[in-house]
Amino acid sequence: MKKSIRKHLALIFIGLMAGTVILCLLINNLLLGQFYLKSKADVLKDAYATIQTAARSDSYGTDSFIQQLDQVCSTNNVIIYIVDSNSKKVYESVNGGRQLKDRLLGYIFGLRNDNIQILEYEENYTLQRSGQKQMEYLEMYGRLNTGVSFIMQTPLESIRESAALANRFFAYVGLACAMAGGIVIWLVSRKITKPILELSNISKRMVEFDFEAKYTGKGNNEIDRLGHNINVLSQSLEKNISDLKTANNELMHDIERKEQIDEMRKEFLSNVSHELKTPIALIQGYAEGLKEGVSEDKESRDYYCDVIIDEAAKMNQMVQKLLTLNQLEFGNDVVSMERFDIVALIRGYLQSAELLAQQNGITVNMPEYDPIFVWADEFKVEEVFNNYFSNAVNHCSGEKLIDVNLQIGEGRVRVAVFNTGDPIPEESVSHIWEKFYKVDKARTREYGGSGVGLSIVKAIMESMNQAYGVENYANGVCFWFELETN
Image (cartoon, rainbow, N blue to C red; front, side, top):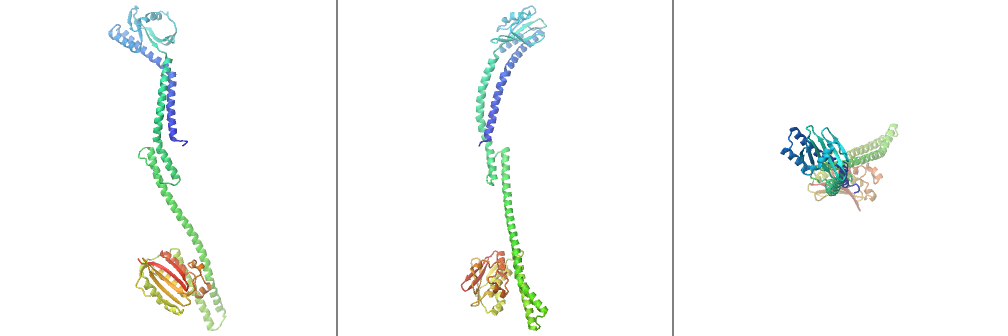
């Protein structure tokens, strides 16, 4: 990964450590000498304070005074020489204090002026830097109000050499610490960036609509809380997208249904207009003939009236069927499921249609069956059988035979209505369930068929989620439908 956050973290921390080391080296080079000189000056001022305190209390020569100065000299490498107003020695440090006697007298009488750099000048003392670079000293001398004179000296080791040595040592230590710190930071940054990379991978999978990946961290820091929130977001997005897809799917179905309804409406208007055109023209023609007195004899007038009544009846029948089909297709007709004997229903219908069969010279056969109880809408099932039987009567020819059979299967019964006659042409089999479709329009016109009956059968059977169909035979056609028995 070119822009790894782990590399960035490691480089940032290593850079900070390296910068800190370099900054410390610069500060050492610039300020270490001044700090060292100030520290030495503070040591001499502490010794001066001890001498001044002794002068005020006139405690020169006491064991306490000597012990304090001896401790200052031994601890801080300070040489001290003190004389009273009569130039009598008051204190002399054992580490070379006698050597400062002549130097003190020279300062008192103004005889010494070799390589001196005055650093601080006060009423009772002068602080100065003296000597050569190879051997420099920090000196303090002066005369108190009591007449006591003193000189103190501490050697200044080579500040430059000390600073260079300290800086070199610090550079080695800093480099080692930076390397060790870099390794530690690289390992620690992996622990820090691992959950971040996991969250990055999860978010990438979410972009691709993969919501199976979940953050598994168990801690309670900010990254873990972020991971938990991403898990919640993932679940919410998955649910919302699912709901959106469901709504979109329903919307597509609604759009398709609307388009289908528009097409059905157009087709319905076109077909109704076509089907009503002929009977309306006949009614209008014969009515005008009656009005204009085309025929004066009663028999002709009765014929005209019979034609008008017959055509009006056909129109009324077609309108009723269209209304029934419209209710079924638009789901406005509620299916009432009930248990009834299908054998009794069919036998009752055949008894009422016996006269119709006799008028057409048709023989109706139905074997004897025990009661068969089914679950369905009894009124709609009777409508289906009525359409099948009427269709069989209208198309029955040849032997003039209609057979009604019931075949009991596993959990269902099939009702079949067979009539002798011409088989349905193969190209028309898939269209006979469509509204206003007529195989033989001339013959259909003879018996007043509207082409809607089988469409009603289709709508009823689909509203009950049951199977239906038609089969061709060499000597006739068989229409069937199925119902559940339990």
